[in-house]
Length: 135
Image (cartoon, rainbow, N blue to C red; front, side, top):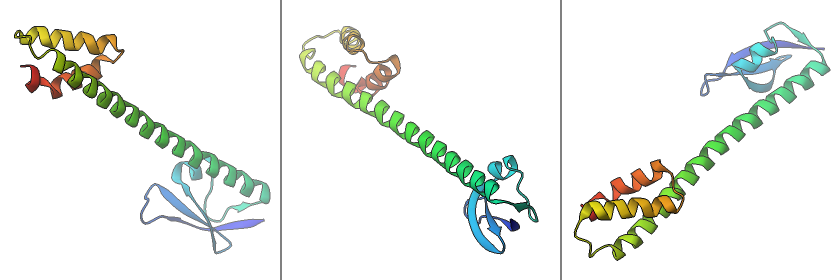
């Protein structure tokens, strides 16, 4: 059995705490995990509880990393769609240069991007960026 001798809030990451077992640093965990596992100074924990703490900590960190990676991946995909739509729209504008009616150019460009499967948000962003070219 080991005893939690100290729980200290981390200096840089305020939502995390450092756990000390028998006056020796053991690990850093989130406050939420500390509350979930009912950890407090003076509590004695056995090897089973220590291994549970480690598993919960690793699971929590893996989940956070997965969420962060998913967010970054989604942002890259959105940016890639906009870049691709912008490239196609510029290419298409070259073929529409002789049309005098700017509203007609705008409609054709919009429909062109729509047929290519781009979302309304992506098309709107591209149309806003290219507004000087067709108006």
